[in-house]
Length: 109
Image (tube, rainbow, N blue to C red):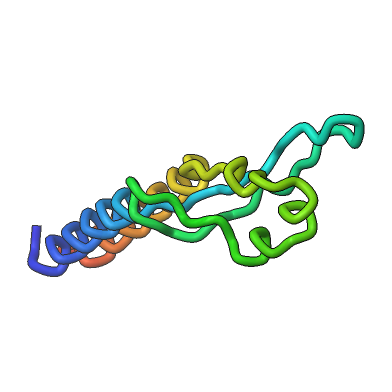
């Protein structure tokens, strides 16, 4: 393995670790509004955030009419790691890294 291949491999590994530390999040708000039925917002693609700290409740939601009509509903906002998007990102990094390692491989004459 030459130096360019090693650099591409290291860059791919660093990218995957970075994506694991700061994964994509998905957010959802859902609650039972009694006679009005079930109220749901989302799921929304959330921001990227440290894996132990989900993104906060968006400002637009805190100021929305639903939170004024039903106090305490801000606590019903949920965030979870978007595993599908994270796995897709990892797959793309792996394919790109493998392609670059092959491109920078030594040519046989």
